[in-house]
Length: 396
Image (tube, rainbow, N blue to C red):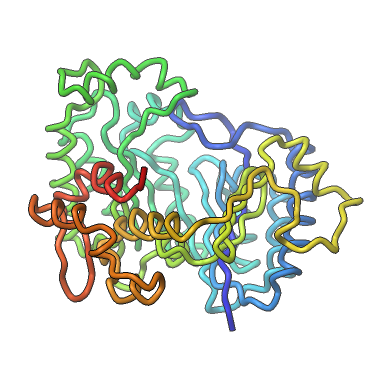
């Protein structure tokens, strides 16, 4: 039986963080309720057209799903259970942030089948949390984490951000050690990206340009500090039993995130909610990004008998064979296992090394990649220069 992954977007948060460019914003309970109702209608309608596929993974992200009121959270999770019918083999993740969790919300999530939590910690330093505009303290994170354990969650991811303004290697490693002391099954470490349209962009964009030019920065860590921090975190996590399986993700044995691996392996997924993306049968779709329009599109009077491909989407892109090859390379190379040469040839009818001869030779010659056990993969140094390596596989 074919499978499908499902992503569900909850675009609400208590307060917009200063570095965040995600599709999210604060909202009152009534606005949340109208959105959840529309989301449920979209889920019912679209999954009905894919019900010959078993749901392999569910990921509720945002925004902050745990910022929903208890009533709206229960309404959403109840509908997910009834429509998508997750079973004991379904990896079912919900993102949550400290400061928005309670015992009753955690018990509701557990009741309706959520079996994995992803907690947005970002830092164990309270001054850094204030700098980021987070609503919680390190102490609140610890309380929420222990409460989740008490409620029976035995698969928890923690998110951290490195390369913060004013942060040196020792400061980041201190946060990392404190986070690992909590014994999570999985940890994601993302280097800060200063995105246009955020308050951080206004504050630190000049520093980004200086770092790109190799000049001395005023606030952000320089390239050498970034590199040294990356080496230190990899060595520490390896010694603590966490295996790196993707450029930013580490897990104990058997605790890799199946949902996220599916993205990098280009498995089919259905995205539900405001601005959510889908990838089904070699076609990419993106939902409406205006919340009023989204609710209107998924109103009570929507036409239910349209094929999935004719549903109203903000964007729809059918990929060419060349675009599929591009995605296979720059997504597959995010994983430490890399791209399987035999799988590439079976899928596209051509040898990967013939399509990307100069790129593979250059990366291997410079120690940024290797070919081993029938796979082309980046080395640790290649991951350090990931954007450069990925960009080599994009055709003009």
